[in-house]
Length: 148
Length: 110
Length: 277
Image 1 (cartoon, rainbow over the protein chains, first blue to last red):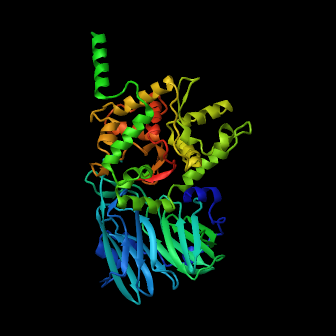
Image 2 (image 1 turned 30 degrees about the horizontal axis):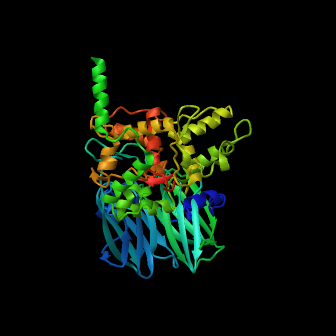
Image 3 (image 1 turned 90 degrees about the horizontal axis):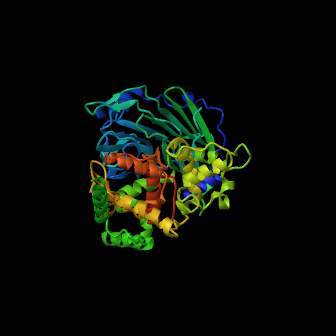
């Protein structure tokens, strides 16, 4: 059956909005330096990432050619034990750092999201585990279509 | 306050599959100029922080830049989560707007 | 002199689009399917509803990923609110259609013998509004009619396209739509057939051209996840892109075209509100 229709007709598990949590008090401060950085080296530095080792244990599932560069699905599957954080960069974006996730024990080293890409370039994923950084990349082509 | 999030939280075996769709323009404020460069044309408006808790315990502490797509989608998997567990997803954006939504984990329909 | 020119133009049109007079819609549909089978021998007919997506695994995977939880869900919900909101007289849209409006969209467009013209699903919505003393919606307004369609058409998801062409007057409208499909127009001098029949499967400026069979099943679409287009909105945009005079949504040309175009998809399942690039 059509999942979308099923959800429309039955509704989601979401309950009513809650009283707002003191999010700012609990979460880490937004990393302005890293997110505002306009070059990859500056973004990596701002995110405190050095000496990332290339790893085949990080598998990036992303398109070869983006259908629409405003909505590029990216899925990260990681087999590195004790993964504590996953950071996603789009090397050619005006601000390369896209998102960063710190995950607790028990959360699978996996994340799926959708990102905007400014131009053809690498999606770069950096994983931190046991104090070490690991990196993998996948190139995604961004084109300007004829019938869009 | 922004529109509610859609949260699909389903458990199969010992793995919870969490899918979240947030409602937010995620506006970079950028437009391409005559030279093809992305320049800031208006103030950006985007979610900066995301927090996910399971039964009150923080499981994901995330940060976004404005490059995350409009109406952000997130998928996570949590081992050991059970039907009936309570998931809360909260976000704050760069204008100070916030949103928090709750979902109860369900069994995945077979 | 003008008469001579008119005759010449008419003959050219007829000559340039072969096999018009006495068309049999079923024969036309099967001829299209045959042509595409030769181009795409390994694609089953049911895949055609995916259009260009059936010709690229990379593109299909992106579609599947986004359709798991599409960014436009709240727009569909707005459509639902429009659909369920009662009129001033207490009735609602569901009262105007059989089966509460479920599994009806595949019957449209239909030829209305009383009115002597093709009626699209959008027009039947406006007929419902007028019958209940409500203001009709602008067919070209994606924010009202488009949003309503995003939900109303989804009530027919899974229904097989079921266009009927019964009688000579209906056939005339079918043929008018078919003529449109084959007529070259605009500065680029393309007909619908140029891209979606002759060049289906080929690439035009990085875009894979989709075959005409299957196309009419999956509307409205959300281009890029948030740009809502009904089928006729797409017709208009395409005319703009080939630098032809853009025609009006809800006008006879587009209605007849949609009639012919939808017939080609008879037997294929509808699915509304989908992602496209």
